[in-house]
Amino acid sequence: MNFKRRMRYMYIKMKRMKDNPRRLARGLALGVFLNFLPTFGTGFFIALIVARFVRANVVLACTASLATKWCIPILYAINLKVGQTVLGMPSETLTTLWTKVAELDLSGLLSLGKPFILGSVLNSLVVSYLSYFVFISIFMVLKRMPLKN
Image (tube, rainbow, N blue to C red):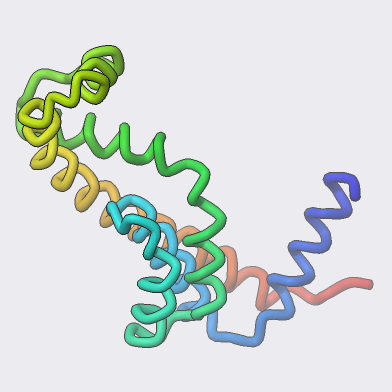
């Protein structure tokens, strides 16, 4: 399937979703939110439960949670950098982090816990908030556009 055809297919699938645009956007934002947090492989199940609780689209919450799993190492590195910046800590280089892991320097790794958690909370709040408003705009526009054959 070529790119143009794939985009059209995705457009039609999104257009045919019968749920409220707010619920759809809430589901996507929830899935994105959970990927910044260290859920240790349970993000899909957390998305499933929380989506029902906050009245979000369960399918989109789980899909967004699974679709962005590939970028978790990048997100976790960003979490650490943001946390270190907010706390005013010196930024660890990737080589230094790898050395701590290789040498099993637990005290050095544990010192990164606070900036990592702070960064993951801040990043998840900011990115999910932004993604909610971006996707609610997209879904509202899609609902108004006629579906062409």
